[in-house]
Image (cartoon, rainbow, N blue to C red; front, side):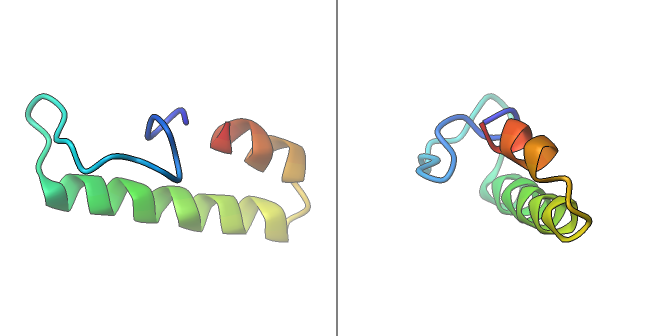
Length: 51
């Protein structure tokens, strides 16, 4: 939720100056980051980032 409010139910509404491509990239980066954190056993940090 730090990167996208309401994740994973992030609305399709555009934020100020943010286009659809930026939203997709940001959500993809969040998913990759969460996967890496979980893989290296940093589940608490991943949970904090997701919330």
